Image 1 (tube, one colour):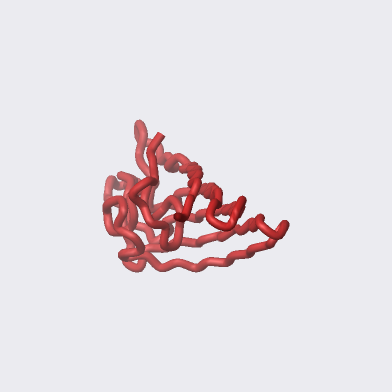
Image 2 (cartoon, rainbow, N blue to C red):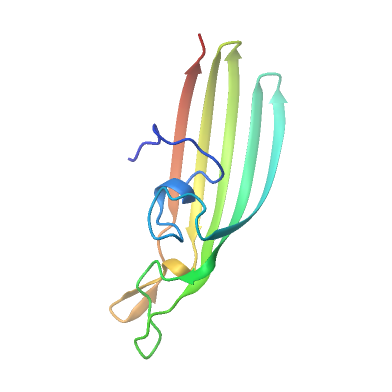
Length: 137
């Protein structure tokens, strides 16, 4: 469990804040990152909105975020950071009370590959969820 309480989501839900980015650290935003996004949103009821964003993430300059090497033992670099799917559900319960949910799925790309006992291994996927009950007064 890792909380998101101090994070103000700008674009992606997980890549920007919870995984090592192309800048080499976490919470670095889109530094050294090029992104392509497509999104859709639908009003399911007067007070209920569902949305989804799909992101394709690439490093502007090739990076090695894992420890993968080629057959000769040289470090391998890649621009392929991965893809992310974010789903948002916003429920406005009353004029001053809303309940918002965010769900994220990040599938790491080649840049995160590592070597395990001489064999290349892909990085694990990252899943996240956040629920915010917002009262304005």
